[in-house]
Length: 277
Image (cartoon, rainbow, N blue to C red; front, side, top):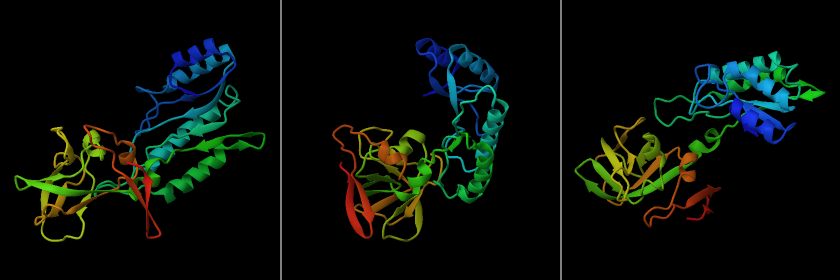
């Protein structure tokens, strides 16, 4: 159990004294511990420990989450150092600390402007810091992280066919936004290409096939790379959206008689259905 506020900690103490809990600490990607919507600020840490001591609660972990799709390794190093310093300063009052969790948010490059997260750089520094964090043989402290999308994000592709051309620069495809919801939800484009077709490129808007007027799979106004596709594209052509291995399958939903798209796994040249539609 990880708690985000003094009120939650107080409530736990009243409900069940002498229980265990971790606390969420607010650290933004800009190395700010002053506090935000979620998690305790640096000013609330000592009052939190006071509440824990009052009810005999054991603080067993510090957890944070600095942001989403972050490419700067130094921001994670800074947040790790911040939690390490906190753990060192509170060693006597938090003797049961078992883990430090720096959370997730590690980025993948959705557009040509994004850089790749340097796991080699972060790994070296994180290993050095872990050696200082892990404690001793009598009291081991775990260093945790949640790599999330960075593991599978660039492993997935979304395939859909063009079913109609409108107004010279609008493509309608045979999938609704409910099959590929990330562009709709975050107003972010994914890189897309037309399979097996080359030629002079032209900017297109790509719309899904549902009745929703906001059913966009790619739009020039969205962040990231707009859809530049061969100008001789036509109905029946296959489009391939890149980097959809993380959020896209998980965000699918049934909507107005449109079923979820099947998830296909290609392994060693063999095609398998990994998830039912």
